[in-house]
Length: 251
Length: 328
Image 1: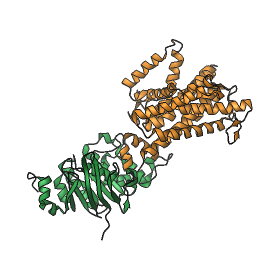
Image 2: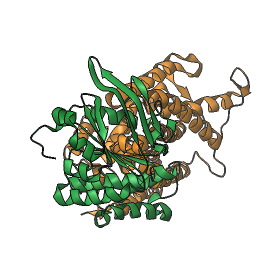
Image 3: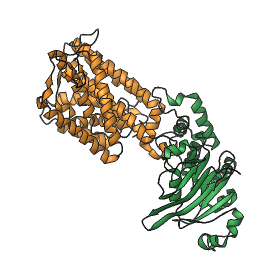
Image 4: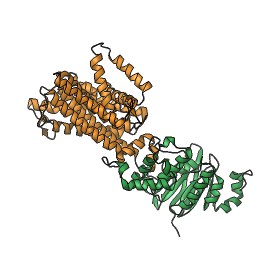
């Protein structure tokens, strides 16, 4: 039996009368892509924030790599192996692409308390940062300021920074958003390979990408997981069709 | 004319000793003292610039550290000149007239104060951070006013300038050289910090704290360490300022003092290594030229500041140098 890298147990979070997360349990197994889908307002963002550490649950536990991280901060969860990308890019906009990737290597190697050594001349970290940039195909803009990048390039940089951390699992919030057809195809191919390095919990609105990539899919509706299964099982699930996919989305 | 920022920095940096040397040749000791004053105020603002420019922490309380540095000098030197030991309760301490020891005490005390203030103030952000740092400044200000032991509101005079091994510190040009040496050393140090992994992380935390957390770093700790280094440098400047005037008073703790440091940085260019140096020199120059013209010379300074903020967001350095600073 394989141990799950991420194990969410009966997570609950309410805002007043609104049950944003209602007794949610799910797991992320080695080498899998587990997609989390659901209509707008289903509670995906709230759930992700509880996994990443931005929001404390009312009840339930978050186990990361066998360790209970429910009470740990965002930064401490990253140290436990959580690599995250954001729905809305969170980058140092005035810095270059390379500087942003270097920040990742600084975090990964815990070498932030060095005050006198020029960081951009650190050969070892630079090689790691450049390798990550090259993997996502941003090497041509490595020295450009992030503020000059396109939306799609910023998404790729988010992935590159996560790569520098060599995380044990990825938490990706809509990595395809705003990428365009060609970008989505490239990202799909990339993530398909990436799962061999570390499993991915993928929140995504692009259903083609989700059904092409996911090993398992969980459907979140009104804070509850109404179904978890393989893409075929989800396609055939009548509850999912009724609650979320509707008749207008052909699967 | 646009110059690379590095070239411009070297020119601006050498202007100060050039003025001092010319003043020496023309036998104008007052001008040397003005240049010394500019260098010390620059040092105080260079300290603040690490927190404000790179860290994005608008501290309106850096006069606390300036004042603590000043009073560290005043208290130690006053005990030395009256030959009475300083009673600290558990033990007594002899006063001293030695600058290196005074500097060490000033830096340690202000770093410790910055740690305590930072632990509280850095839990807030934006306007609340400004208000908390301001409140600490006012606490120290009113405390020294009502504390009679070291002169209270009237301040404390030190009759002879403190000593530095191998120098005659009462000679204006020698004292200037000492102060300028300290400023140069601190600028070198700050330049290194800016380009270090710590500098990268601190600057990134200013731009996007979530990004820094997501690579496993704590923005709070980064800011706290920056605030402590920043306070320590401003404290060192305070000790030098007190030695320049041979006088300390509660004014060193006033919020106007904190405001002036911010003005130096904005005038010169926020987040530019040499911004505070240019700003402080400009301020002292305007003060010298305009205070003779009118008692209300600060009106003109206000006008200059307004022009810089409206038309030259990168400050004087931003207007003269090509390329961009840390942020403009």
